Amino acid sequence: MKLAIDVDGVIYDTQKYIMVYSEIFDVDVLKRNSLVDKNGFWTSYRYNWSEEEERKFSECIREISEKANLVPGAKLVIDKLQKQGVEMVVITARGDVQFEDNEQMIETTNRRFKEDNLKFQ
Image (tube, rainbow, N blue to C red; front, side):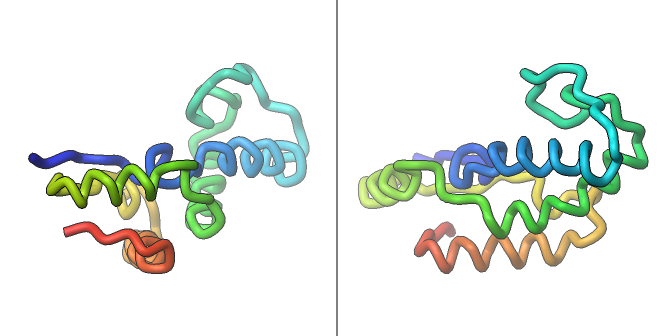
């Protein structure tokens, strides 16, 4: 059996960091309070930012990817499923063309997997 899992929100808890970084970006960098929906999942729903401001914030994503912790229990479940013979396929938008540093995002993700002793085929 094959199982596809996402990196962000499934393996790494990046959303918490995005919430914090986006609030700091809005207040400290943009010097305003652009929050329009505190329950919005994506920054484009949470804030009234322009496309340029969204692009500028996206420059923080690699730093966030460096700091995000493993989702509690993620490694345990991944290891258990792999021991049962489940082939894990990673899916992610990291390295997507929207990021200027695509190769660095991919390298960061692969390095984090190695550091956290996560092995995918």
